[in-house]
Every structure is written in structure tokens, then in C-alpha cells.
Amino acid sequence: METFKPMEIPYLEPRPDFWRVRPAEIEELCRSVRKGRSEVIARTPAGRPVYAVFYGDFREAPPQTNWSAGSSSTTWRSYVGDAPADTQTVMFCAGIHGAEAESVAAAVNLIQLLETGKDFRGRTDPELLALIAKYRLIILPCVNMDGRALSPDHLRQATFEDFRAASQGRWKDGSLIGWRGSKEHFPLPLERVAYPGGYPNSAGVNIMHDAAPGDVRSAEARAVLSLVARWRVDLLLNGHSCEYAPSLIAPSECNYPRNVERGLSCVEKVNAAFAEAGLRAPSTAKPKPGRGVNLNTLATLSSGALALTLECSVSYDRPKDPTRAYSFDELMEPNFILLRVMLRDGLERPFVDRSDF
Ligand SMILES: [Zn+2]
Image (cartoon, rainbow, N blue to C red; front, side, top):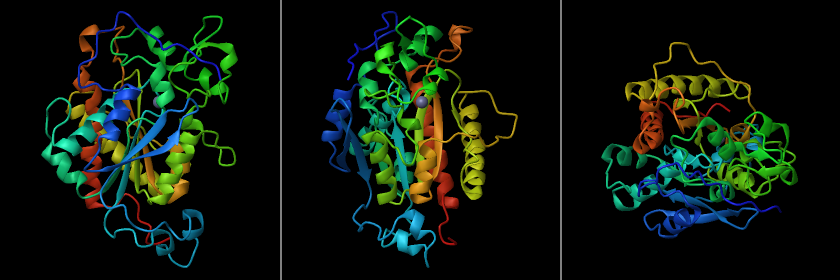
């Protein structure tokens, strides 16, 4: 395995105290969990622990069948088994791309809120806590701990060049690997890079695209998928970040039509809530399904789940308009808005209706 030095961007301001996104801080918090239960679900190629934190009743026996067989069997109940009736299971998964710290910061603050009643800013959120209490929640505060360990604490007000380098890295000739360029290889050929970025794990695997069913490479992706299957996850929220304003991304057309329809309606509601909060311009166009195949696709195949990707913003339009840079609070906020809107919505209509399979 190649080893690389963490990237430092000297002109970035120090993070605020509540932005606890370093692997040691994430581990310490997960080890301190008492109201929930934390579990190491995988080890990264560099040996770091990947944690899941559970809130709610997770005591039922494993499914007697898998979703593939169960959804074709005499009854859907063969997969659902004795899981608590009327309690949907939500997984909030952050840091699959380690450079993208916004959802990691939010997940860490969410765990602290659930544990102590206040997040690391000292804020409480009775509405969100009441909503969460109506579900089972699994929080994965940082799936790609290796990528996180290499990455700056944040990329707020980084130049576009530095944002790209921190995210997808540089080749040995100094050129940027790039967002699309990073996907031309799987895994990334580490012997050819000067810096791999925080996107892949330390074996060069982009966990979000570790989604070839016969060839899932990373322990991290396998652990996420086996948790989805084991606990019959109904909704997977997959937290990422990009250089644009925050948005919930339309589901892929590679899915059950009912999930696509449900996902598109969630996208409209969540993006409208981001606009209402002043975090983005209102959307005028109706969202359309994309074509991507990724870990969300495999999550659906593992439990029938509705799986959606959030893109937070790392550095909104900074080159054009520095006055518009988000505060650190605003960088995290899309995660909390997403959870509030989705958890409210799921009480009106289940995320997944398995009853007619
Ligand atoms: Zn990402």
C-alpha cells in the first residue's frame, strides 16, 4: 500500500470547535455512546475502525431469507420477519468520500445531540429528536476513515483547484485527476498519483462506486450493504458534498419505478426546503431521474430501500462571489433539513411499501 501525507491548505481558517471530523475524534465519540449502541462494522485497508451507531430497538433475529429471495417468495414477511412493525429503519451514512466533511460534521453533532440533548454547538433540537424517536436510526458517521485521515478538516473558501486536488487528487505530473477522471480507473492506480485525494480509501477504492455485485472490493462497502440487509433498512440517506449549492440528488432510473417516483417527490420537497432556508435558489425544473449505478443501487437490491444522495456544498461559488460563502453552520445545515423533511414525510407515507411484493 502506498502511503501519502495529509493535505494541508494553509490559507484556510481554523475550524470551529463543533466541527469534529478527524478520525480520532469520531472514534472517541463513538466509543462514548451510551444511549445508543456503537459497533465497529469494518476495518479500512489502513486498519481504521468504521463505526455504526444505533438508536432504537435493534433486537430482532436476522431475516430468514434475503431481499432477493424473500421478495419473490410466498410472502414479503419472510424477509421482514419479526422486525418491529410500523417502525421504519433509516440509515444516515456520511463520509463515503472522505474529503467531504459536511455530513460527517453533521453526523457527529447528531450523535452528540442524541446522547446528551445538545449538539457540540450547545443547541438542542426537540423537533428532530421527536421525529427520530418514531424511527430506528443507524448513523454511520464516517465510512471512509482513510480518506478522512488524508483530508483537511474542511474546504470552506478553498480555491476550485485546491478543492479538486483535495477531493480527487493529483497525478504524479501535477495535473488534477478530476471528478470524472477519477472514475476512469477502479481502483485508482496509486503508484501513478502524487496525492490520491480523500475520495477513495487507502487502497484507491471509491466506495460509492464499489458497486459491481460480483466484485465488491472494500470491506467498507460490504459492511454498509450487509447492515442494510440485516436491519431491513427502509431509507438510506447518503451524505456527500460538491462545489455547488446543496441539493438532494434525483434517484437513478435503475430502480423500482415506485422508488423513483417516491424519490423524486422527496427531492422536490427537500430542495424546496433548502431554498426556503436561503441555502440555494428555488428549482424551477421538475427533477428527472439520473442514470448512475452506485452503492445506493446495491442498497436497494439489499433490502428494497429507498436510497438517496445529498450533496452539501463545500465552497459555494467562492471564485465568483466571496460574500456568499456559507458559514460552518450553513455547511452542515442541509443534513438537518434533509432529516427533518424526510422523517416528517415518512410518517405520512412509508418510504418503502413491501406489502405487495
Ligand atoms: Zn461524494
